Length: 252
Ligand code: MG
Image (cartoon, rainbow, N blue to C red; front, side):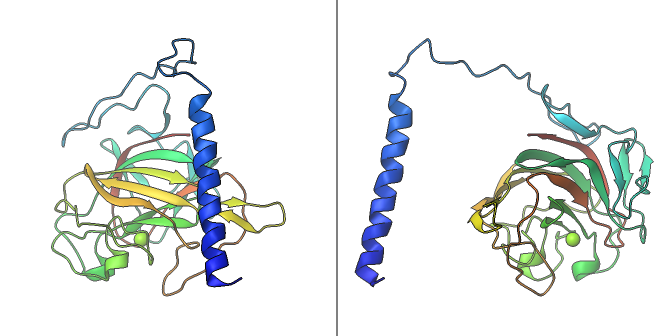
């Protein structure tokens, strides 16, 4: 295809998408009161440093401070991490944990705390991570006045997208991630239809704005997408550092 033909086809594609959007909007006259109403969800409450907030009424609560019954070891068997005082803590050398259930497109809320006093530096300082579908990692790391490579600091999409800003709180303080994750779509033959998409709010601050991972996250490499199931467990990383988590819920 010549460059001008490519531009023309791209422009036509955009025009078609715009028309499709207009058609969807015009299905309902403006302010039509017979239009289906959004269902009611009772909002939760915000967390304070001392007290985790409450999840919204339609959330799937993955951890509310008591037990890891919805989780298992990534080696199979019960989740081996420590649960106490309303949080759970990574136990070094036990490997990661994952949800028993699989999830695809989600809104996730998770709070975490890096060890205080801080121990280690760079990637060995409060390192853990949240893996959507077990493959796409939003980094958890103590990046408060601590240097590392930008695409590996807290709230980076690991190895791909640094956060827009460093919104880290000091170690020993609770921090919140609110993440909207859309899974990649594959054709039945395994070809990629659309990449994953990800928006991350760290401590109330936008740090990933609808970015598109170019494949699973990995150390020192860019791996391409390979087809996988629509729903897979959410996994948390054991990177050998005693990071704590509390108040974890998601909405599908
Ligand atoms: Mg990590």
